[in-house]
Amino acid sequence: MSRRRRERPARDPEEGGIQPKYRRAFGCITWVNMAVLVFLAAAFLLSLPFRYAGSGEIFSEIMGRLALLGLVLIVPGMALGAALGARTYRTERSLAMRIGAGIGAVIGLTSYLLFFTLFEEFYLFAAPLLLSIGLLLYALFATGRSLERRRRAVLLAAGISALTGVAVLLLGFDVLPLGALFSAAAAAIGGLVGGIGYARAGGDEMMPPDAARK
Image 1 (cartoon, helix red, strand yellow):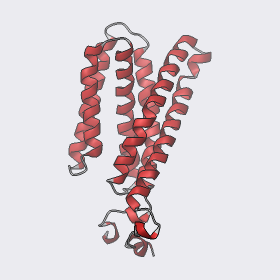
Image 2 (cartoon, one colour; image 1 turned 30 degrees about the vertical axis):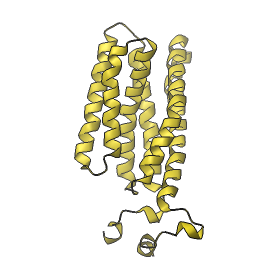
Image 3 (tube, rainbow, N blue to C red; image 1 turned 90 degrees about the vertical axis):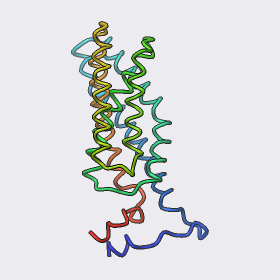
Image 4 (cartoon, rainbow, N blue to C red; image 1 turned 30 degrees about the horizontal axis):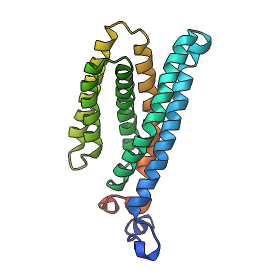
């Protein structure tokens, strides 16, 4: 029965149905929203101990930046999620969750550092961070490339962002390591949730063409 559902042809849009790739795109938008909500919740819970057992200023500083980061990224994240969903098939949940957590962590780190450098007017440090973002977009959308090559792009982006963060840290901003760490951790959790949705969105009609033969 499962194989029969996978091989079922997509409904013709003229008959009132929505093409599977567009249903997948809408599904990915929903899961991006969920991932952002999880990111904000995780960021709050991770930084909450500083509100009562540490410095309230640290909590306000970190949480304020992370909340702004999540709100600013949600719209472009929805657009990218829709574009990625419309051009890709479903995948195994475990693989999607690992990829989502990994890319989410790098996005959280890179985005936090980029916002920090722009707010502090360290525009010179924004250049390598924009390069990291470009590598992440390549890893997401270069679907014709091998998974290993795209994984190396993510690792390279992570290395560039980490080195940039160390360079900024040497300038004496003590709150930067905690903010970057919490942002990366919260985004990894959000990416994990987003990966679950990426593996499910679109239904059986968006299974890979060779899935029924495995």
